[in-house]
Image 1 (cartoon, one colour):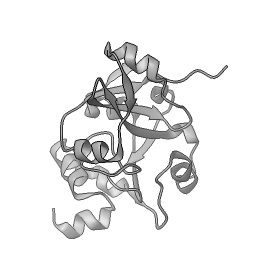
Image 2 (tube, rainbow, N blue to C red):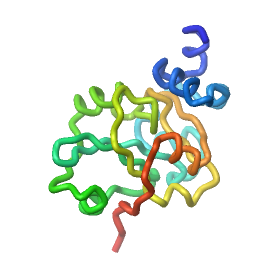
Image 3 (cartoon, one colour):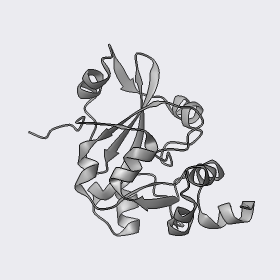
Image 4 (cartoon, helix red, strand yellow):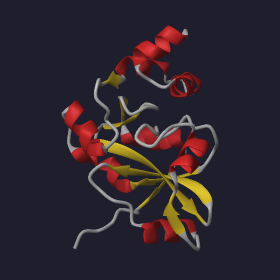
Length: 168
């Protein structure tokens, strides 16, 4: 793979390397790059033309100060109390932007579900499995890729949990 191949795919170079390392190099051909940022789930869904719930958000939280990745469908919010229970943690908070970048190697809005700078514990909400395909960030706010949710969960090394905030 050359740098040009990575740039042409739209993927962040670290993410493109992760795809290759996982034997998923063919996914680079499916990465969609957009001229406008797809930093939020709503922006991504609008650009792709899919349902908001078909977006996979990669969110970093701090559980007792230790970063943890939560994969959540784009239409839902994470319930911090449920994450706390799932992890057996004392306190769970949203990670600050610099923690997200230090942990994953990516900026908020472009964090992919795998291919991070460091290994972290990963939780995936079961709601992702409600879809045949979900779309996730490819390492930057302008690129996304499609994947079957069960494969995404497996490649992320995630534990399936129910951490979605329930609406009244």
